[in-house]
Image (cartoon, rainbow over the protein chains, first blue to last red):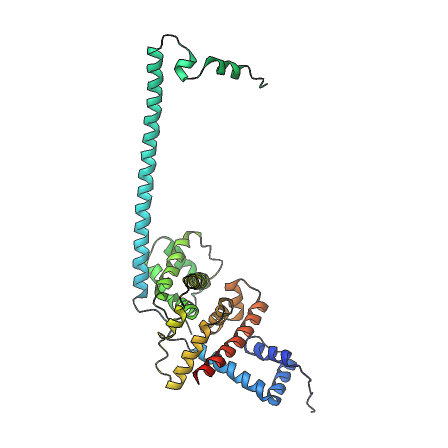
Length: 145
Length: 188
């Protein structure tokens, strides 16, 4: 059987060369690459170099953490959870404190109002709520509806 | 090769135990995936002193996200994504500090003990060259070659089309070879 002779440009063959490692080449592309590799010493060298680099990178058994790694992770996680628990407690404490302040503030306002009513000579909104009667009149006469 | 992920049923069961705070389940997750995470982080950053700390943070972030983890991706895929993000953050931090720790880290490689002196020299050189690649190229090389993921898995982890992964991988290998040639030229 006569072998098909392919004409190729360098860039398309280089693309095939790199694809050959990761993507599957169809039979025609495979033949084109094989032929080009036979014909070009430069291309063959590049192919071998990439092959060697890949084979070297694959050997990664030494890339690992220390044997105590799982213990360290779990200890760190326990620490973080404890911190989160403290932080939650503090937030709850602040919320409770804030509520107390709100209740006390409300009670103080009511108390002040009562005192103001009791000691005031004339029962007017100005004396009770520290706002002039004219403001209320203006509000009451606003054409809202 | 690194340990592979659990089966999906096993993984679901493990996740449910881990969500309930089962320490043994958390330990199993760490033990089963630490090598994969180590390869990702060390491949991206070199064997510098802070890599183990970043590795620990990968698992902590995963544990934190456990209540929201719906299990659409495998645990290992999710962990590798976190590892890559943290490694890229670290690269940015190093750049900001203008400390070329990656070069310093070159000296710390513990190369496969069984290899010959020549093989070890070459392995060291290749890993140094890897650290000189741009992060977008480095991550595809680390995932595909160092971690041993398929190109489809790499595409899934990086949320990229497979074609983009393949072209980045090709370009990365080309660049790696160029860097190696220049390093060898400098050395000789």
